[in-house]
Length: 397
Image 1: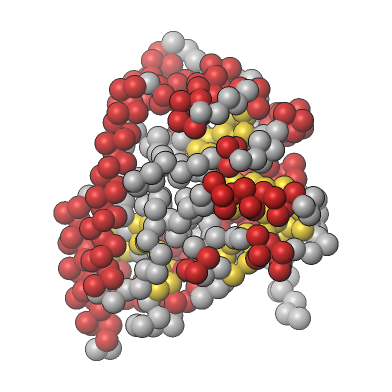
Image 2: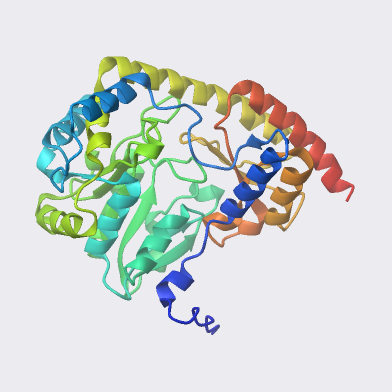
């Protein structure tokens, strides 16, 4: 058994054991190259390239002008919780009581509440590997742990009832899945969600579902887990589909009995989410705003439909077509067993930035990279030309 090194003197072990985003050092280098005059194509950061839609910005400006700068209730503005409930009614045909909805500082705030409520020290959730790294880091923060479950293309890079059965043990208390998932863009249908729910309930476990990329699916609308399991915990965000990344706003839907405990946690952990962001988010659900967001969704679909075959033609393996989010998770094992060096090569030689698999877990991480299609089509075409050229220089090293 490997004993981890001690943390720097005077600092907590939990801080020491939470890994940094490896992509951030790559981003810093990309920014330095830009400052030196290079034309860098950024395909590394999971942030839409669109600015926040004008009706949302205007609502935020109006909130500032009206003096809406004070604390809100810890669970969020009642009007916003009502609007979110209305969104569930319109999009999913679900009648969600607004009292079950807590507005949070980003999707991260929702994850902080859920992990604080459901995970005791030493207990863990099952998580797919690869997966979004902050999920496991939040569990470490609350003195729990992530039980990483290696997943491959044959399972759609998702947990299944079979993998839950094989990896569940006496310290397991639940599972967190994402649909659509980061970094793979894969989704779970209603039957798969129902089967996971049944598998966890049979073991006395909780099901937590990250639905942060809902709205960014192509050719279909992803089902919410609440359509098949009203007791599940749902994390969502205004960052991706709604394009409010810097506003830092999200929400959590919880079973009614959990709400008093979650409200208490919210009061203590962050008092309330940004009041200005909440007032701005009321405009998210207006028809004019939704029309803008749907146009943007179509642009993401066009980008995926261009980039997916283009990268496959260059020899990057993408074994499962992503049905949502804005990522392609590429197997580069035909070229390298060191994805980090691979990413560095393309940044330095071709000024194209993408993310090494190491940020998303351990399972075959050194053989994968994530490429985000968060640039417009002309920039993606330029990126493909540069990647093709970079593959030639990589082979000739």
